[in-house]
Amino acid sequence: MDYEEFLKNCLAGNIDKVRAALESGQDCTGPPEGTETAEFDGRTPLMAAASGGNKELVTLLLEHGAPWNATDKKGRCAGDYAVEAGHQEVVDLLVSFGCQAELMLGLLEKRQLQQASETGNAEYLKQKLTFDTDKVLDEQGDAVMMEWERPLMEAHAEFICSQGGDILNVGFGMGLIDEAIQRRSETTRNITSHTIIEAHPDVFAKMISDGWDKKPGVTVLYGRWQEVLPQLSSYDGIFFDTYGEHYYDLSEFQSHLPRILKRGGVYSFFNGLSPDNEFFHGVACEIVRLELRSLGMESQFLPLPAEAARGDSVWRGTAARTTFRWRTLRTRPPRPTTPRERHERRPDR
Ligand SMILES: C[S@@+](CC[C@H](N)C(=O)[O-])C[C@H]1O[C@@H](n2cnc3c(N)ncnc32)[C@H](O)[C@@H]1O
Image (cartoon, rainbow, N blue to C red; front, side, top):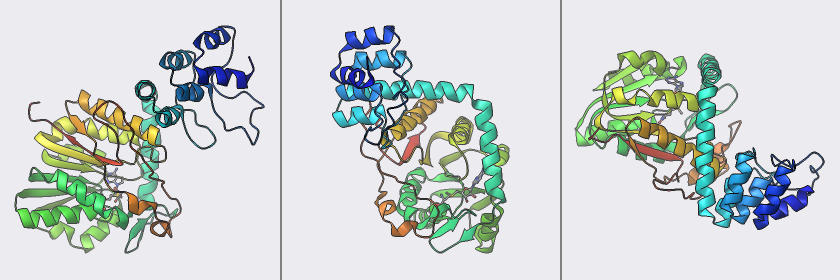
């Protein structure tokens, strides 16, 4: 069957014809050589089937090796096609398949991921940083942290300080969340301690010259969180937001939460996972939810405002821009809908 016809059958949900073609050797992994013309949009059989909404056919293609995460020329994956066509069952199926595939890959490639991550973070920590009033830039001109994120940091601070007590922030950056924690500490008076971990020498030097180590209740721990971990006690609120690290590191940090997060404590992190594609972002959120659940924590994903990131002016002077363009992606509750989220360790654990 030629590729166009195969796509049409996938879209129309003609499962018998598609099965017969697959059994006679039809390739469903992507567009064959020669279809890369300017007019062709890069659609794969799985994308066509996802648009058509036949769940059984989508399963059949996945079983025959159709990649769940291939993208077309506009960067859209099969999940995006299913979302757009409103086929919720297919969305759920692809989210679930994507999670399993990524979790399996994470296990198989753990060693390589760990090495790549350590190298990337070590390289970042050697760079000279530039401090502007509204951003901190690395040597490539990429933004380590930006002022437009202040409302997001306020929201995270509100959440991690909601129990009062001992608060831990990993990654100082511009100190936006730490300022918000301090403000709460002054007004509510129920924050006992505020610990900050920071690994970059330039950021640490600025923290010291700005007097952060002298603020009442504040302890600054200099070093990578990976090295500082053994010194940590346990906390009522924890926030994680580093730079030059990967999902591997976030996942690794989270695996220590059962020790460093008190019963009834709350945890939140900067969620820049797959920021350019809402479906991949949704899958990443679901993976986080599953991982945290395996540690005994329930997650809640809340929408936070990221409109400020959409204006051109905020990115002026930076080398790269992150798109941050999510719509609401419905999966089974709790729903991954946001660029930032929060997680709660239930008291009954
Ligand atoms: C995005 S900024 C944090 C912004 C901060 N949330 C705020 O409100 O301004 C990330 C910070 O994490 C620090 N960092 C990077 N890798 C780290 C690591 N392994 N351990 C501790 N801090 C790290 C960076 O130097 C940087 O200061």
